Length: 206
Image (cartoon, rainbow, N blue to C red):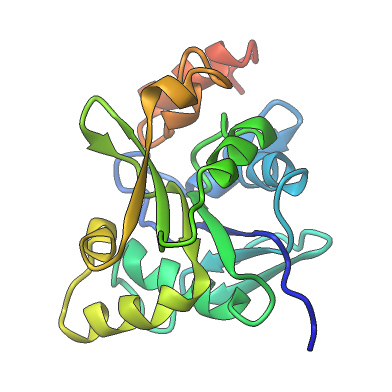
């Protein structure tokens, strides 16, 4: 029997980017794109990495990173998460799920999340000021079946999966130990947030 990897990584790129006005995965971020930065941030802490893309979404080839397509288009992030979890279920018991628009997730933060896994939990998820963050969370890969069942019922929300699973909450006190300003929570979903993220990273706007 092949030993499972400690933790895989899932990057979702299939969002429509309506508020940004253009695909977020290709936005320049220093000498790379947001997608390339996401992969680089994850490489030190998870393996393998899979990108879940929308149908007909053309992504660049990235060495040692696989990609899968949403089985059904326009079904929201729960569909993408389900596809990613199913893809890595045979090689890893756990997977980190994130979007391609969260440029400040670090290896240190991922190791912090991994340290909060428990034998009973199916999800380990940050919670700051009573808000849960499902796109910076760890999921047992076997729960792709629960996600599939929710999708069959017409559910599309990521937090619906949390409602259906045993969740271990990771509180702010633990998170600020590795990210004092909680930058990892920032997602780049509008032009204004994109400019803010560039400024936080000391990068010039393209």
